Length: 318
Image 1 (tube, rainbow, N blue to C red):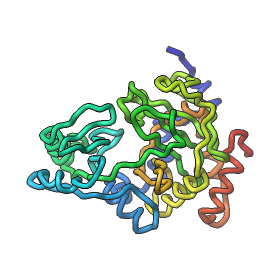
Image 2: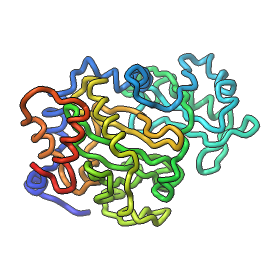
Image 3: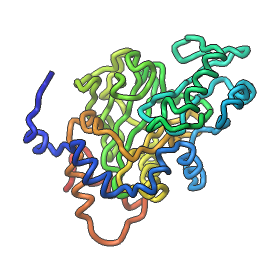
């Protein structure tokens, strides 16, 4: 295990958890607005009201006796996703990529019986995956159609794009690529690959798995340095818009690229993790402090994105 002294981390502008919690989450995220991002159903409703594209909402299961309605909900679907409205860290998400004669199959080909689906939804309702163990509801969403531009980037899962938005400015980004180790999930702590992205261009800068630098995807052997995320400007604009939508100053946005619909907002996070710094091979603190130092009137979304592309690129200009 490699070790870094605290002064080395400070010198490299690394934001630590205490400072994140006190100086950014605590200072810029009013608690009264947490529900807008902690409840994925509310986030989806807000996004739709603000013209932001999200995955299809097939249905919501709010009570145990409604669980048996799921087969009818998904009868014409080739696949679907069930997730807890108040879950975090990818917990409780069940992805079904094939429906065949009432039988369900996961991305790795394993069959999931209807009884297992019902038990999973029942666990969601009882709060097994929710923040604080509170009773929850299950969201049934349409399956995202994997954009072929990401072939080789990911294994048995859809790569997602995480952007940190501070006071409406996109300050740091990464692509999270699922692996066999992460069981098709895009969470870095579960073994997904994190690829740091240049805010100016959407090109890859650096990549890690389990906090160690990697050059190739461990399962596909794809050269991670070749990544160029398409529709980058749209992703930046969508993420920046989320600032006005939820009124939280320090925010993580998770988005995916759908083959037919383009960028879709998956969810928002009021307490985004710090691993994005590892994926980028640099700290985020100087960028946050730079935004804090800005004076004058609030800029438009277009102006904030243009400013971020100029000042938070691979060779930061500040």
